[in-house]
Length: 317
Image (cartoon, rainbow, N blue to C red):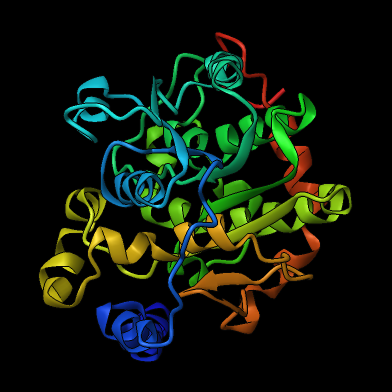
């Protein structure tokens, strides 16, 4: 009953705001992005469809060079069917932890990075593991973005005045950070929907950690959520949600707008972290029961660092 009541309150509070109604209302006050992206190198994960595809196309349109990373080369090739001189593609399974260094090497070969967009995200109702025996959903949504971002920083591939934009979800408003729910090692323990929300809450905590640790060097770390967007992931993972709200769901370009704006505007990161939504920084908590996450950065980083990402492994070391 408490869960049902919470869901009703959540949808009642955010329903209009997260749909295209909210976007189109706020869009009236948006300034043009202009030429700020010209000459910048933007790296986008999960780039072959949905929001990621819209980010790639939007950044190219505004003059950036883009490295697009996804696991399906045919879909990457279809981003710009006739090719583009400022587009580089990297075919990689973003769930595989033991190949992160290969992606970083490939990015380095393209050139130093102005903006990294950690966009990739999955919600898997069926439990699956990668080659290292690690929960694929957890590896895709949290562990690998952490490992790749850390590597780009430590190797100075992310420029000293560069930025990281991580794409979270409004679902994190209903999720406290529970470390034991970030990943599972058995099918009967897997709850993809709950894990997704907790992983997205963890992204907020991780962004604040990065800003506190690396922000003083000049880099900026942002987390945003795109609202409710009609993507293939939503179609596959949340079919009932989509069936009810489809006429009001945002399209991919609307969901991508704040990401592209952040890459262009490079605003100073709020401290403590806030979550960007429709080009404005907003509170990361809507309910008191999630506020304990703010003090859990050390526990989260310790947990992420505990994973042995070499092949094979079935659990944290």
